[in-house]
Image (cartoon, rainbow, N blue to C red):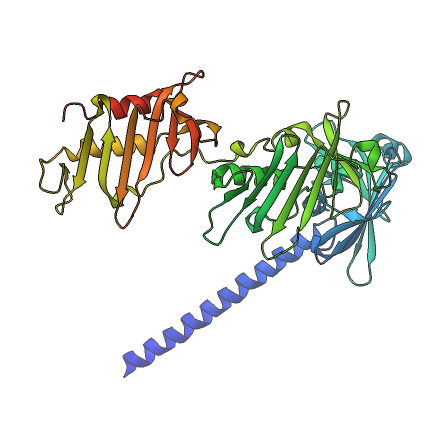
Length: 457
């Protein structure tokens, strides 16, 4: 009994010690947090900043005023426009990194001469943040950049002390309005676009994303697209940035060739029956190394860099898939090859999953040999799209064909077919793939494989 009582007492003592240690640790954490808070130059969280005014006597934009809205930051003076919220938040973050401790205070009570030395006697750059519901103002005055350590001198209006702040904050405060303005071109998330068109002197292109989730060309030809090229195009526009805001209205669009645009892009967002947004591209400006543009969802004229415009597909072929044969290899059940000598080679997959000559009871053929052939053919790429006019295929050596391939899959009533013919002026070989329904060119290796791969069987 004495043993149990002693153990219970020790348990109580341990619980008490643990509780005291926990409370002491929490108290220490609170004291450290308080010290950290007191060490900040700006006694608030950047998310509490609701308006921001940047005054720069040396800039063309003497004063820029921004406001925080539910959908991000907006410029409200000297114009009204969407702001680049990321740039504004980055600026505030660099300001918030400034501290009020001894390591950051350069001079607690500077003389007029010292203020001149710091560039703060008559500061040209001032940033005013209004915080909280009462919009309490805090103004940071920026002086010169320090010679070392990547810092600049600054002072909080109403205080004597001169602090050092990150040079990036000083640099960003010195930026013009273009830096803080939203320069996004395509404001639709590319994954939400399910249709787009391109109108340019070379022709009209229309591409759609049907219910099966596979992008396809609708005009000028119905064909498969290369999904990577489609997403590269949409992604390039989504990531592109405006290089200059030329005019804040569209009153003089003819000056920029936008009354009769050279190129027009139209985008449909998923669920929209009418076009969501249109981008018109006008004259090229050699001096600005870009093109004048306008969009249906905004009221100004702007410039896009040449590389952005040059990346827009010129022809439907630029978006077409270059895959030569579309076949589910695991479902292949029969292969027919017409090569040299006018004879047909027939390979059939038996019930034992082995390839055999002629039929399911024929001589077994090396499985790896056939697999390698299938891989070679299905990895072949289209080199050129020649014509959709299928009259006179004989001049391409395709009627009759020099060599032909038929792939049959389970459940199919028609084969995936390929014909190859004469050598083209480009050095490639003319071909006709049933899935494309047009004359193409392919690498000469494709023809050589059809003519010689199974020669020894």
